[in-house]
Image (cartoon, rainbow, N blue to C red; front, side):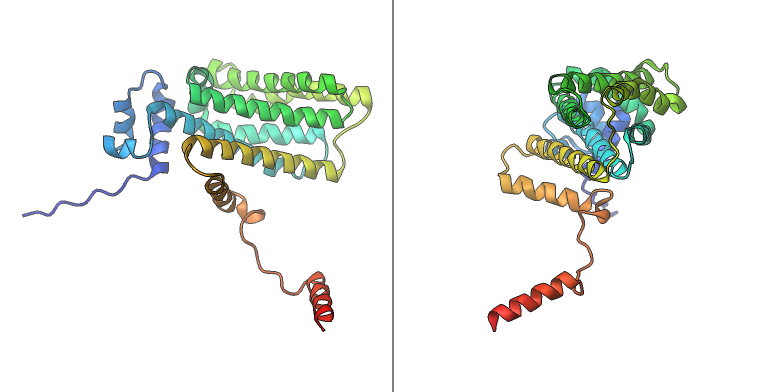
Length: 278
């Protein structure tokens, strides 16, 4: 008698990768739940143990794409010297993050607004980006009442170029970065020309990086809330902390680092503690 080999437990990330490949190839709407489960190579029971529906799978894929893009932007913009370099870096981040997943990006942009969960993810990401840009524009001298409308104009300009590239396919892959930069840069230059100010100080660059990081964290927190609606605030915080310690680039800031035992400040603190106790 031949023994049967026990089937390995399906990995959530592998299941999501399989679903993304399926949606990228065929689109979301035409794929049935049976198609999704078949692509994942799992049983119906295994699927429902991890996801409530096909819509939830798509929502999580869109959220993952947006979160990864935000994390990459935060890291890239931490070192830019001015707004021109910032837009070039931002455009490069877009290309590097989206180009390998162009077919899925096309599906996310064309069908995402028809799916409630994915629509909320896109709305949250656009709202956060517009709010962040509005803050930077106000600091550059834009009147407060004009900062948010101009920020939305920039978001719209970038979105339209990505839509042309992924969905309409009238922007070549190699021209995407230039198209994004060309569409958005004049809206920023207008602020610089009118007020003679630019994003040039190291403190402002660092502040921009922190704000992008915070926006990415809040997006991930919202995603965890959607995935774990019954979880407590502490449980959500723990999930966010785990992601921060293990996400790409964590070794440069969020991961546990080398213990510091010989810093002068620590020596001074130890001496003060000893003198107080004696």
